[in-house]
Image (cartoon, helix red, strand yellow):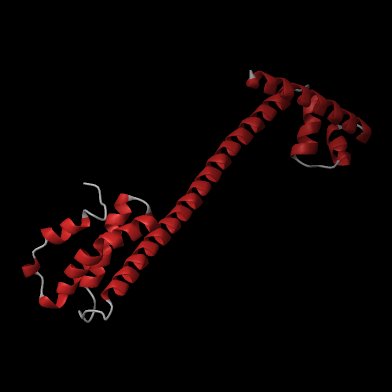
Length: 191
């Protein structure tokens, strides 16, 4: 059954007024007298049936559990004020929930991107290691000592027993070969 201002009157009919204490009869009269207008207001604020039903119910539960259980001076004003507060609280809660979900989604996506980037980086490093292993020994030694061990050219030349200028030339040749091989590998991967 769809909730409409006209169907709210049935709620009052379904309740047995005799079962409600006299101190809270005003709540039932409020449901009967102001229920349809209240539903219309809630519908305009919330915009969907489930939320309107929840807000309507919460409004009257709040009224039934008032601390002093006394009838307010202006029932209509109190009823509409309570209902609007309930509806606004629901909207705020949903907004907060959406923000948290968006934040979690962003965190999840960034984690996934980091994971994919880590996999790509690890694959790229392995391809580079394989390519360095394919280099002629004299070029590979210079790359390992200069780039991986981060030694200065003078120390690389001393360890390999070559001149400093030769170490620079060998490194340049090695980088050109590695670049060419890696770009060929990348083109193969794209196909």
